[in-house]
Image 1 (cartoon, each protein chain N blue to C red):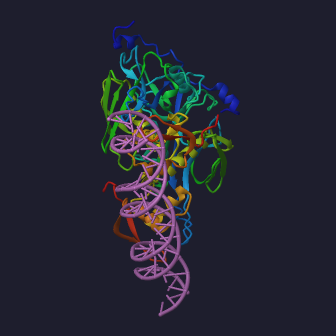
Image 2: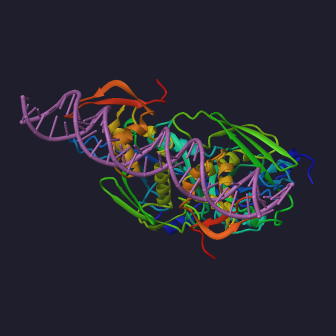
Length: 274
Length: 274
DNA sequence: CTTGTTATTAACATTATATTAAAAAGAGAG
DNA sequence: CTCTCTTTTTAATATAATGTTAATAACAAG
């Protein structure tokens, strides 16, 4: 029919299949620093996620993940980068694609497929650069065989939802989830949060991504707290130290002033030395 | 501006952002049975992937993964299911989303974003149901720190390509790959193959997905060969048996006739008993 | 009956992980 | 200045997981 690819392309009709819209949603995760209420000995750390309050329809006045439309002349992964820049004023942030959601009715406006990303940030690097309608929520994440219970709390508002894992017959596809209760979080964003936390929990043990959430210098106690928050359980000191021993290096700095033996400050071994 | 969501939706202009097309690509993986050349003692198993030869532009006469356009009224994950049915005449196959590729120029026709899926099948269940332009290729997959070398071979044609891993600074994002050499495989499908094999290698150790590639009854030797093919290395018998001990159950069937001690046939423990 | 072959498991060696508990070093109270 | 409190840090031990060697089992073919 056509004798060359050029000829084919010239005659190509892009409207053969009806086109659709794409958006991106970004799960921005960090660990609460909680320095305000740091009495000594009580510095409970939390996982935290950045949400924005919608001021337009649909889902007006509900919370949602930062996101937006993919532009026609923009690479897929450039959209989350752009939005991250707008939202936190940071670039060069760890970003990883999570999952693409594409149910026909997931958006009331029209057919929209959305690719979600997970970003890990060191909260101490931002500060006052947050957008006005954005807020960090502490995450409590409880998972058992059948359900995941998530509670989000920003100090003023509490969002709770429950996610049921659908029958995992022969496998453990961690993304086949169903939202059971939710009335404050827009779209299918509860699924994105569950998928992201799940992914992070999993990856923390075989990659070094956790250091994207850490400042340059940290004590092993602080690092252990972050591991504990992400894994949702206490770790024993010697075991933890053995695990991360070859990932970090001791510096000659120490952190004193805590009413106890001062702790050595460590840094990530493979970090680019500035 | 609008006093209700309905009112907003009624007035909504879906053409605010230029829409794009979406396709899906399916990485159908299996393990070669190789029963034809089964002399005794030499039954080398291979990983295999199903490719189809394109008979239209673009990439006419090149091989590619089975795939197609997402229809406007079709859930995202229903598209790969539909195509899988067309291609292999099987349904109820293990299917898992891999990654969504969305570079602006990844398709010469127009802006197309593609979500790839991985399907695992038991090759003994198909047989003569293959589409005429489709063919199984044995996969050889060699991975080191910097590169992945892949060779695909269907007995008549050999496809080779090399993939470079981009600088993994703070992390190990297994998807940030670059295709270095490739002239017979269309689109960014080398990336999909690398991502899928990588995912399978990883997941085999903490899930039971491998049983999706196995027939109902199998010997531990056969299962071990599949593990070895997927992991790309030899395993020691006792170690392997300990690992899978609680995943399989011995049946009273045996497989004899191999010129040696007959082996017990096992089955997957959590399989639905028919 | 002997040999070749793979299946299967026992027994031991090595390594990794879990657990307990002790020593180290500063802050603050008196 | 000394005692107590606290957290850091590591030593030492116990337990579990994994790696390795090699013995035994069972059948086919000559």
